[in-house]
Image (tube, rainbow, N blue to C red; front, side, top):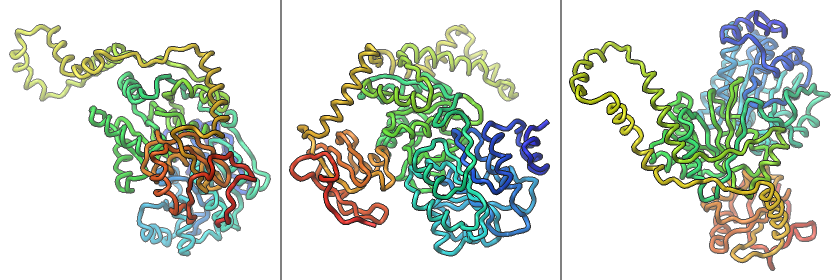
Length: 563
């Protein structure tokens, strides 16, 4: 018996989900669907990515929609093109036996003319990214006046990406809606504000503890010197021969650089970052989805909304500055009930971040030794031997060559043949790891944690003092512009085309940010950023006059507000 029947769904929908192989609803589906089927209740669903949220809101929508009315009745807003397409694909599968219902995905990077033409044909469900949706509204190409149901999927990601004003604009233009359904992995203040400003007594459902991690994810961390990160990364990849994973970096420069180094070393990997055209991005994601690529390396912004089944590992090349970003990174694995591993490469002074993460997601992190070179070789060797032993030799054409093979190797023992096969496959591994050093940082954990806290305290106090080698710069961008430290760091480095090594401490405030920059690169950074545009604002960057002063109401530069 299909347990979806107990949730109040009609026979056509039950038939579709049964044919897809679904019989038991996930916890978020079980709790959300009966509430959403009423159609008139505002709803907040907090659950990790990969827990079946699309079906949780998609199935009730299909039952509430009128197939006879050929205009938008439901609007689903999501952060990225990839998620937009994935949701639409899932809806099409769910509506297989619900005749007359149409869904259209609208997103940037594709022909808006074609999207407008498809909308005019008459669709009941519009799945959209915020930017393209607003473009269509301003062109009067989509009418939201009759939309009854608005779904905000991955709401925290959209707000992290700076879409708060866009979401407010859209919600104000769906004034005849009957309910808002908000789904999010975490509940930061910005998401809570949407609930407070636009929703009426919403029903809130939390699967697991708020901001908790997926129980199917094993969280590991490796402690190594900062200059050894690449070597550690390569060793982790080699130690897990069946890895199908995503590697996260802070900047697109890092993503591209590491991708090129690993590609030259023979790994199936490509980078996903903001410099790619939509066509290039689609090509990379297509290769990753069909597993032509073993690895994808990406920035947080570029990887938003990636929904790919079967990812075994997520590797944090560096821990994110914003702890909630970790939740989204780790959520790329262990989807749909599978298990996965999220591994982080850390410096010893970053261990306080591990403690913060453990508290935030209520999960223990396991300190794991970086495997030795001999261990890597052994793991690869036996993985290949298992693959060799399990190879399919049932095809008849192999019999044609068997007599020649037997004659060719008649004077060679079985042991020697195996040795030669191993040599062909593993010579490069043995050479690379022949004199491999121990990359682990050996230390007293308690002492290191204490030092980390002391270093952090000294760091915060010393930010008020001018340090040799750095120039303090002021920039009129802050958290009010939708930035967090990670996204701000990426923006600054992308605009100036500088490496992150030139940056010192960053003090981000609501209206502005103060940052330390290597003296030799300060002028170049100012030249690149001062006078540029960000969200139609003129960006101002300059040296802090008379030395660095901690920002306060009295010390902030007086300037006109920019709207």
